[in-house]
Structures are given as C-alpha cells and as structure tokens.
Length: 167
Length: 412
Ligand code: SF4
Image 1: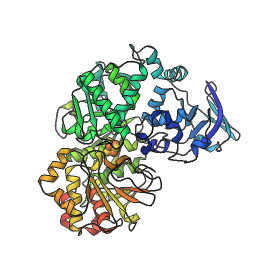
Image 2: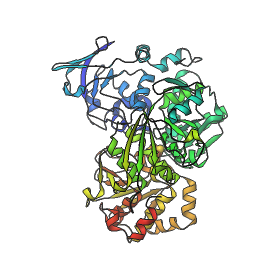
Image 3: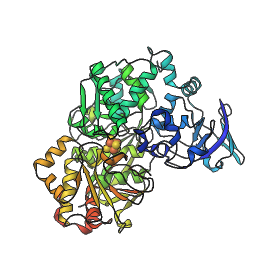
C-alpha cells in the first residue's frame, strides 16, 4: 500500500476535540462532519484540505473522548491516511473499523514534513518521504493491512454479518 | 502469578491469556450512553442488521445531552428508546446521572466484572474492582451484535502510593499529579493499577483515580479492594512507579492539556470567571459537599464568578437535598443543573465564551472542550474550585481555608 499527497502537520496529543469539536456532535448530521474536521486545531482546515491529503502528527494522536465522529470527519474531509509517532488506542480501533489507515512512524515524522508539501507514505518499503528527508515506519499488523485494504472491519462485517470479522 | 487483568480476561475467555495476546472477550456488561448508543445504532444500520446477542447484558444510560439539548439529540434518544424496546433491553436509565456513576450505584460494576463501555472513561469502574474498557461506536455495535469483541491483553503498570495526603490535598490532586508525572500517553495500551494508599481511600476517591487514568492513556484502571478474595488482590505488574502522597500538593492542570500539572501556588492570582463542579470525576456527594462548605467558609462567591454545579446522579442530588447542602448552594448563588454530564462536554448548561476562564472539577481541558476554543480551563479539586469561586482567582486552599475545613476532606 502506498499513498502520495499533500501533508498537513499537527503536534503531539491531538485530541478528538480538536479533530471534531464536541459542540458539533449533536448539532450536525453525520454526513456533514467533514466540514468541521480539525477545526479545534485549525479553523481554516476545511477550506485547505483536499481529497487524498495526508495528516502527519506527533505522539498520541486521537487521544481524549472515544467519539468515532473524529474518524468520520477526517474521512469525509478526504484524508487518505494519518502518519503519527503513536495513536491513542480507541482512535486506532475506530480507524481500523472504518478503514482509515493509521500508520505509526518510528521517529517523530513532524520533524521532516512542512505544512502543505507533498509526501509519500510507502508501506512496502516502510518509509515516509518528504523533500527534506525520510522517516522509517512501523510494520502494521497483518490484520490491520487487511482491514485497510478491504475498507475496514466494518466493511468485512457488512459483507458477512453472521461471522465476527475477528473469527 | 498473573496480573489482575490477565486473571480477569482469562476467566472471561475460558483460556489462559497473557499480556500481548489477542483475546476474544464476552463482557459482563455492555454499556452505551446517548452519544455512543446513537453511533452504535447507526453502525448496526450500516451493517444492515439489528441483532442484539445479549440484551440482558446491555445497560443504556442517557447522560450526555440530558434533558435533550437539541432537536437532533431528542430524536436520537427517542430512537434509542425504541431500539431498547424492540430488543428487550430493560436496563435503561434516563436522566438519572453520569453513566460511570450509575454503573457503580446500580451495582452493574462490581468486583471481578469486565465492562465494555461506549465511553473513554469506562476505566472508572476500577474504583469498585471491576475492569472497564472504553470503545468507540463501531466496536460497541460489534459487541451488541456478537456479544464479544477482540482485545489485546494489556500490560500492567502499577502506581504504588506510600504515605498519606496532607490537609487540603485530595484524591483529585493525587490523580492529577500521577497523570502529570506519567504524561498523556505513558500508559497507552496498559492497565494502571493503584496500590498502597488508594486501597484505603473511599470508593468515590478510587473512582476519581481510575477516571483520570484515561488521561494517561490507560486502557483500563484498577484499585484492589483492601480485603477480598485472592483473585481481586494485586498480582504481578510489568512495571512499578512509586509516589509519596505526603509530597503531593494542591495542583491544577493548566490549559490546554491534562498532563500540564502545576502546584496551584505557581498560578496563584489567575483570574477566574466560571466554576464547574460535577462530572464522573468529581460530581459525587462528598465533592459537592466539600465545595459547598469551603465556599460557605469563605463567605460565598466573588461577584464576577458564575458557578454551575451538576450532581453526578439523582441519588447524589437527593442526598444533597436531604441534608440541606442543596439549599445552601442555591443561597450562595450557584446554578444547580440536573444530574448528568452537564457542561463537561461543551454542549449545554453553561458553555464557555471566548474570554472565559473556568475552573472545572472534571477531567479534560483541551481547547474547545467546554465551548469556545479561546476559553481557558483549569482542572482542579472541589476544594481548589471553591477557593477560586470565592476569591475570583486561583489560590492554594491551604493558605485560604480554615484548618477545620481542610481536615474534613483530607485523605480519606
Ligand atoms: S461527565 Fe464528562 S467525562 Fe464524564 S462521561 Fe460525561 S462527558 Fe464524559
């Protein structure tokens, strides 16, 4: 798997309130979440982001409340994948379920990426490449690769609801 | 020997599992609230099925937007009620209080049980020696559908607390100090087990400690009961961190991160416009009572401060009403909102404006958490909140409050 696109850079501990602020959760329908993606961190983000863009962040991305709308908002905004030094576990699971690839980097990827520049996330070579350098990526678990390829565990369950996707 | 979580999960899946293993677990309790319940329901629809494997294990609690804060919220809650009726889900608690408090009050969370909840603070159940795990809506939909879910067995980090808390220093100060020392992601994928002093604290304080474990990234949290069968007592741990409670001071988490913990003395004088007392962290009877007594002892609130108090449950509210605390609170000029999450999630009942500076007894101070992204939130104990409310600025409760007021809430 491989993604190439413009990158948007965020710091450590980006929590779900920054990804989709709580005040929109029950005011906005599920299909409109993308219009508010990342506005807790950058109010202009929805105007800048385009289909296929990539988020790059530091440690503990997606911490805070368990709201799955955070994943939906990023997907609706067109984010193809998120590369971070680490992810909060509920966010990681939500992303796995909904098929948003979350790739862990072995070093802080924000060090080598400028806001808006083109980057390549290459899961075959396990590397993130930017103009100014490279950062090695962690090997994702096989079941995660499979889930991302198939559109998430949810998609697997949709095709066969009788059988738990982990069985 | 095994860790407590290895013991509990081995029991639930019927085979011996260890940290790092992927286990498929059937939880004793499947908890959903009006927020996560709505997402789970939507996910079931996406899956084109509405089966609920174990309706007898499902507990549905409306607490986030109660009474409904918008048409959208009201519709979603009505849909959930209809869903519960269709599937014979009988344990439904509407407007009764915050889910984590209700789980304990109603005895759904009890020693040895495993709880899967659609809320990140489900580890709060560790205060009564149950293991709670928080999940998002799709995982909860899976749990409804299959009665089970996959889970990687977490490792255990033990926080061993020696010594005692000094006068005016509360379990909240201890909990925040631990999060500050460990840092926001330190316990990612791990169980935080609190031993030593925490084992001797009252249930509410133990819940407060476990509640904030989430902010250190923990997957679950646990305080062993002081007495009880061997299987509930501390087992192995993969790592131990020690902390001396007598060195803990009254602290605050300063904006905009829970792990940015400073002694209150360091931010003394910071002007305050709002105070929120409540939530699954500190909305219990002793919290609100301590707040009221301290505020009273200081002569009531500063005229520039608006106070919202939200009891964690109807039972808490009743107790406050019966012993006169509620009356005193109202006389002192606090707004008392119905039991539930209140303004904790920034949706209603006291949303913050751009220039507001709030002292909150809850567990999150991220930008925008309680309303405007411009607003500042300091997390603190009910005592520190009372002092801030009275003085209109942050100050150390040990300097401001009479000795008698400090003793009442110290330590145990
Ligand atoms: S009180 Fe706040 S932290 Fe607790 S469950 Fe409600 S919204 Fe979540």
